[in-house]
Length: 498
Image (cartoon, rainbow, N blue to C red; front, side, top):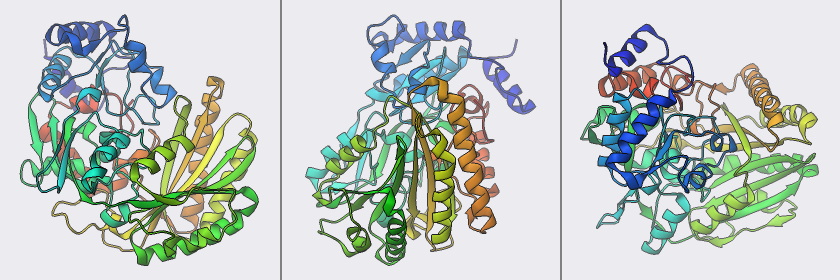
């Protein structure tokens, strides 16, 4: 009888899935019981008082609705190692949860399987020279900023306090500091990661550099379970930011102001701003979420935004913690049903306005039941070409200094009866806008992992050579394809799997 690993390998070689249906709960329950004997205080069964609390810690309601055979909350990397060995030997489907903030069904949750919940991996150590910080995979950005700011240092972290550190980083990471220091993943120095065979390795530029290269874009979930991240620290003495809000009848002026900001940013290369357009209960409003990485009042980069007539204006000198907390409150859709879709384009002012018009037309019939949001983020020159790294990310964006635009469509709703409609709606939005951008000759291949829909081929969007590299590394470190086949969720190296 072949081993479970052999079964996985056979499935990989034949190009089929490990299982054709849901995870085998019977197998996984046995695995949960085995791990419980090893670490009884770290297993949470459905009968446990804390099970519902852990289940409700997911951001997206879709993920909260998944009920695993157990949650496993390890406190050390060694415990993760023992558990993944039991999971593989038991032929049990599994999932990995860091902060639990994904918009995709099953991205970090699973029904009937074994759920790794990394919330209790809480290592925190700042290097003596204050050039780096090592954190466990259980940290969220808001609490991490609180620890770092008094030390006069900061990381290229999330803009929402409730987002988890590992998912943000390994999914790319758009930050208020990205114009200066690149993507969040560009600031990863080292990773402790547990492989499919249970071994714990440290991947960086000198130790397992091929694996480290793959982690810079390919997602940790495709190669192992990341238990700790060593991140680059940067000097910090405060910020300027907040948000301003305009009514929908000013949309022409908003796009004119955004055009001026975009061209100033090409020279400034410091600031960050999200243009966020939302339809709530039929009414459209535009908001600009601003974060300038220096304590400078009214930086000229945003002069065109200041000139807009705004119904809300919270711009002020602030710390990162406050800005991230504000974002979490203002954009809160926690506990709702959420879905995302994304694309990247070359900048064109007329195209952005056409995208808005298309978005407004497609979403209008559903305004009563579904909250629709359209976001524009700038992919800056530094994000495309961070030069301080010997090993660069695998996004395939380098070589040009032209700024790009990342477009995000997000939907949130309460009624499960709207699930099918919302799924079709976000598909229609993506297809229509991709067609517009393609016709204009502005569509780019790249798809940002943290904003992508599970049906989008994120890894393929990095280019054939990078995809080939990632698959080669996966075969080296996970030769039996455990993280491709036994773990249903996440963006796979060959596209959609779950």
